[in-house]
Amino acid sequence: MRYWHRCSKCLRPELLVPLVVAAMIDRGIINHDKRFVILMGLLLLLLAVVGMAVSITAQYFAARAAVLSTGRMRSDVYKRIMSFSQNSLDRVGTSALLTRITSDLNQVQGGINMTLRLFLRSPFVVAGAMIMAALISLRAFVLFAAVILCLSVFVAWLMRHTLPMYNTVQKKLEGLMVLVRENLEGIRVIRAFTGEEQERKAFFSRNEGLYEVAMTAGGWQSMLNPVTFVMVNFAVVILLYYSGRAVYVGSLTTGETVALYNYMCQILVELVKFATLIVQITRAWACVGRVSDLMSMVPDERVQHNPAEATASAAANAAPEAPAIRFRSVNFSYPSNNKPKAPTPDSDQSSARKAINDLSFSVAAGEMLGIIGGTGSGKSTIGGLLRHAYDINDGSIELFGRPVNEMTDASIAGICAYVPQRSQLFTGTVEDNLRLGAREASRDDLINSLKIAQAYDFVMEKGGLAASVAKGGTNFSGGQRQRLCIARALAAASRILVLDDATSALDAATERQLISELKSIKDLTIIVIAQRTMSVQSADNIIVMDSGWCVESGIHEELLKHNSTYCEIYEAGL
Image (cartoon, rainbow, N blue to C red; front, side, top):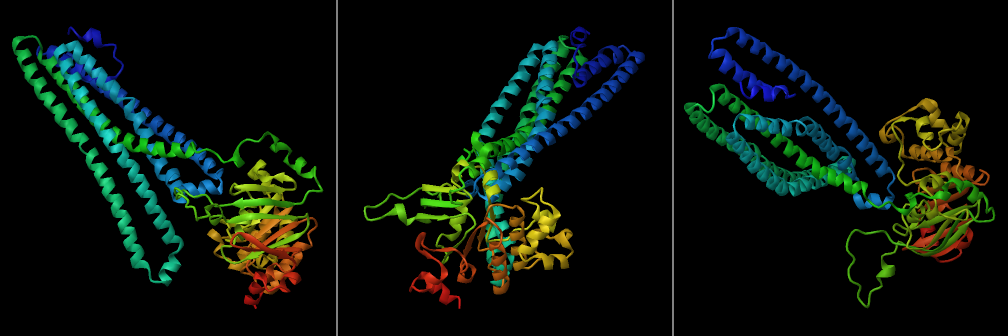
C-alpha cells in the first residue's frame, strides 16, 4: 500500500493496528491471500501483547509516581503545619488544615495519576491518529482537526466555569468537618442536653449545601462526555459519507476507509478518556491552589532563620544576673480576621480589645510566681506569650535576658516547660509520653519525675513505665492525667516550669505536696497560673489579674490584709 512504508516506523502499536487491518482488507481479503491474512493476524496479536505490556508498565509507574510525590507533599504540608504559631493555626483553622492534608491531597494524587496515565498518552494518540489520517487523506485530516478544535474550546469554557465551583465544594467540606469534629468531641455534652436533633438538623443543612454545589459542578462536568460523543460521531458520519463517495470514484480503497474509521474511533476513545481527565484535573487544580496558599503563608518571625540560634544556651548563661523571666510594659490583643470597625471619637479601641495591658514584672531564677484572677482576666494569655505563641503589640518579654522573639521554638522549649490547662496524653505507653520532650532521659530520671509529680504510685499500679496509655489518656482520671503531664514537663529538666491551671483536678493534700516537691528542686523557676488561692499561696510573689490588668501583687499574707480582688477570690474558695 502507498502509505504503509511512510507509517511503518511509528512506535505506538495502536496506531499501527488500522494500517494492518487495511492491509488485510486491500491485499489479503480482496486477493484471497490467506497466508497474508494469517500473517497480519499474528502481527495484530503481537501488537496487542506489546500494547498490554506497555500499558501495564505505564500504569505501575504512574501510580508509583503519584503516591510517592503526594506522600512527599503531605510530609511537607505536615512540617509546615507543625511550624505554624498559634496565631497562624487560629487564622487558618484546624478543620481547614485537616481538609488540606487529607481530602485536597487525595484529589491531587488522583490528578497526578490520571495525568501521567492519560495526559502523556491521549494527546499523542490523537495527534498520531491525525497524522496517519493526513497521510491517507488530507480532507480527513481537516475534519479531524476541526473536531479537536471545537472540543478544545468547549473544554476550556467548561473548566473556567466549574473551577470556582470545586473551590466552593472544598470550602463547604471544611465547614462540614468543623461541625462533625465538634459533635464528636462534644458528644457527651450534646447528649446531656438532648441536643441530638438540633445538631442533626445543622449537619443535614450543611450537608445539603455541599450536595447542591457538588451536584451543580458535577452536572456541568457531565456535559463533557455527551458533547464529545456528539461531536465525534457527527464527524464519523461526515467521514463515512466522504469515504463512501471516495471509494466509489476510486480515490480511496476499502481498507483505507476502514483505517480512517478506526482512527476516528481511536480519537473518540481518547477524547472520552481525556474528558474524564479534565474533570479530575479541574478538581485537583482547585485543591493544588488551596495547598499552595497554605504553603505560601508568610512565616511568623519566631520560625524564621536566626543565625544566632546556635549560641542560645551560651547567650542565656552569659548574663547570670538577669532574671529568669521579665515582662516590660507588655501590651497584647488577640489577632482578629474580621475587619476592624472605624473608631468613633468617644471610643478607646486601643485598650478595649487588649487581653494584656501594660504588664511589667520579673521573676528571679529559682523563685515561684503565682498568677491568679477570674475567668478572662488574662492569666493563660501570659503563659502563651511566655512561650511566644503570639507576637506582642508593645513591650518586651525576656527569658534569662534574651527576648523571646529572638528565640526559636526549640530554644524556648529547652528553657521553659509548659503544662497547659487541658491535659493531653498520646497513645502509647507512659514512658513514650514522658520521653516526648526528653529523648535522652534515663529511666531513673523518668521515675524521679513521676515521684515529684505525685504520679509514681498509680503508675506502678498500672504496670510501671510500660503501662498503656489510651487515646487522650482516657484510661486515667483527670487528676492522674494532670500529674502525668507535669511529670512529662519535669522529665525535660527545663529551667522554667509553667503550670497553667494544671492542678485544678488535684485534691488539696496532693497539690500541697506537689508544690512542696517542686519548690525543693534547685534553681527551678516556677510559674503557677490558677483560679484558687490555695494553689499560689506559697509563691514568692503573686500577681492578681483583672481584665488584662495587674491590679495588685505581693505575697499571700500581704494580699489578705487588703479588701481586694485577691481577698474576694480567697473567701469565695472557702
